[in-house]
Structures are given as C-alpha cells and as structure tokens.
Image 1: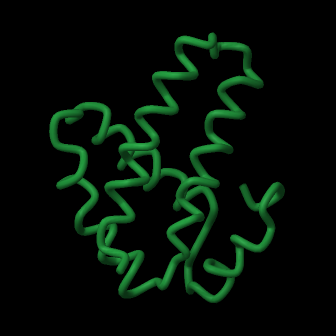
Image 2 (image 1 turned 30 degrees about the vertical axis):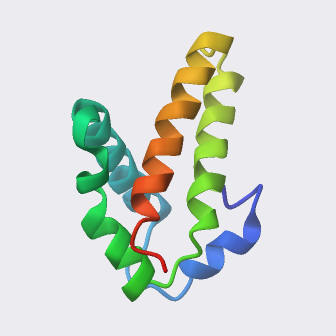
Length: 104
C-alpha cells in the first residue's frame, strides 16, 4: 500500500514504535476475526473505528485503498477467480463500512 499510495505512510511516520509488519499483523488479526464472525462484523470494528477516527485521525478513504491492495495481491498470486474476487470485494465493503462508522 505504501508503494502504490505513498501518501498513506504519513499517518505512520510519526508513530513511535510503528512497524509495517506489526501493523500488518494487527490488520490480519482483525480481518480474521471479522471472517470468523460474519454475522456481527460492525460491532467487531466499533472500537477500531473510534480509535482511527478520534485518536489517529486516519482518512476513512485509506481503508478502501488497503482493501484494493489486498485484492490485487490475491489476484497476483493467481488464486483469485472472478467468483472469489466478488466474495472478497463484498466482504471488504462490509469491513470498510464497519470501520468507517465512527467518522462524522
């Protein structure tokens, strides 16, 4: 994401102790939880949404950019059929909506 959308790194450069690998692990964990609790995705991201909106001042549009990068990587590895692409796209729309809920 930082290579394709380099301006997104500005949110992280002043964060003490931030590592891309550490944040990737957090994102992966949150997505794993969302997959395992598909019936309640919005409540899974309520706290994260508040933190990103009120504490970190993240641009809500960045969440969509990240999902585009994830889907691109899945397609690049050739494990993404059109049907699977549609499933991931729908899932990520729910996730982006959930994590953007606390934004005004």
